[in-house]
Image (cartoon, rainbow, N blue to C red; front, side, top):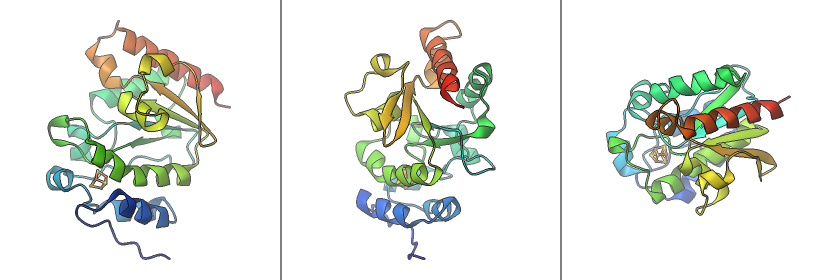
Length: 209
Ligand code: SF4
């Protein structure tokens, strides 16, 4: 097996990508990502590297990708477990989907201080982990939750309102971009983001066999 040493402090994105690409499976990737200190500020303030959840079978029907862990995720080491996670679970259930059949990931795996938006170099470094996770999981469908995740897949000029509601080809897979549950919470139960998120998850469910 390749030498799997975690990326060094302030490592370049290429170093993270090289380590990630050498991980032969999910467990090896998780083991080498957990001590990652490539982003000095995030490594100094986080409690956990939030690797992501995968179904027990190891092969998800679809993958959900958010922006970065929040406070509860940082505390527990699991993605989407705070208020956003509770709403996501509810809307998945309303769409006829179950979180147990999904993998749940973030584009950045360490909580930015005070939940600030991840900086471009942090996204660049952490992209190596996400790319390898998607290769290993090999999902047919990916749902990008929120603008940061949508831009990661569809490009920096992405406007969420313009791309949501339909699949986009990405690396042989279908990417759907929709609102983050935190936006649905912010705009309230009758707000447009919640209705759009519910509609998009229902449309995704309709494409899954
Ligand atoms: S955000 Fe990603 S690349 Fe940066 S320290 Fe955390 S795991 Fe490593």
